[in-house]
Length: 290
Image (tube, rainbow, N blue to C red; front, side, top):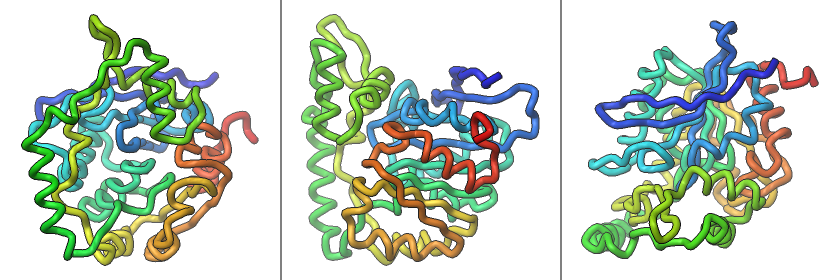
């Protein structure tokens, strides 16, 4: 019998972190898997894959400021998010776990592997090879843009949608994905108000970052990841179009790359082959014994 999904809430430094968990209560030694979603997504990003990963004690979280998790007054630097993930693992009473990150989640999790290597048993990157980078010469311009964004927060406040379908249509304009995948994200990412629906995520997530890493820094982090790593790349996703992708993935000292049909959200649109790659990588039995 397949384990059931459960809603969980954790407390991290007085803030609520929400998530979804699948586990077999009788499998006390099941391998632990923490799933971290992409920018402006949420824990529902992993719901299509979860049925195909029955061997794990699996937790998919809403990152702070997304879904049902509280916003952080201190903001969302990569180092802060690594700290938050560490505290989440501690709140789950796990000593360590396998880490799976999609997009933004796949930018944070390699940094966590480097900042706190004892926590990571392995790393799975889905459509991710580290964050966007730019030359050091761009820093003054970026600092000025970030300051202007912070001084004008009203421009990032959520628009109001008359219906959920309107929010889904907006999401489909921003990202190529199946309508059912977009609906899953929206179901956990909007709140109902008297006049319709608004985004639930913290609008500060849309502000410009005050600093990007250089390409040299990104590659240094990837080279410092000490655990085995699987990178899943969609043949029509963002990574396939970026010239630096292969050079970045070559930095992984114990890395494996799997190219599968699909776009940036292939883990939602076509979850079974992605889950099969994860099961093979971690030596877990796939669903249905296939």
